[in-house]
Image (cartoon, rainbow, N blue to C red):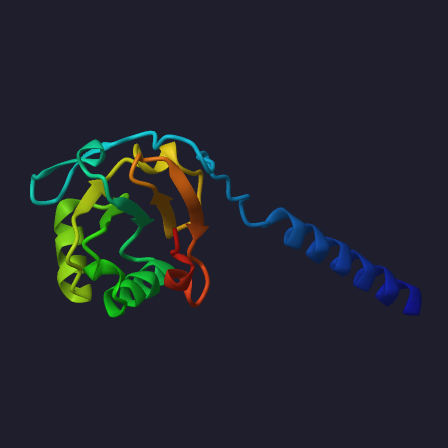
Length: 163
C-alpha cells in the first residue's frame, strides 16, 4: 500500500511539473533597437488628425498600450501625474493595441490624457515594435531614432523615461 501511495504521489508531482513548464509566459521580443530609425512615422489619431513624426524636432515618446491592461492603466496614470506630458520639447503619442477610437476616447477622458491616441485595431503598428508585452514605451530622439525601449510592467515606469 505504501508503494502505491508513493507511486501515485510521484505521478502527481510529474504531472504538475509538466503543467508548470507547459504554461510558461511568452518571451518578450522587441523588434527595434537603440539607434534604429522608427519603422513608422505617420499616424492618424482618434480625432482624424494626421501626425507626421518627421515634422517635429522634439524628442518623442510612443506608448503602445491597451485600455484593459492594469499595467497600461498605471503607466498612463503616472504619466498624467507627471510633468512629462507638459513638456513642449516632447511629443507623446499613445497607440492603443487592438483598440478602436471610441474606447480610446473614453480612456483619454477617464485618465485626462492631453496627447493624441492612435487606434491600432489589428496590431499592425504594434507588430512593427514587438511580439508581446504592454505597455511598451519607445523613446525617440529628434531624428526619430530609437533611444530606449521600456516594457512598463513595473511600479514606476515613467521614472525610466529619460533621454
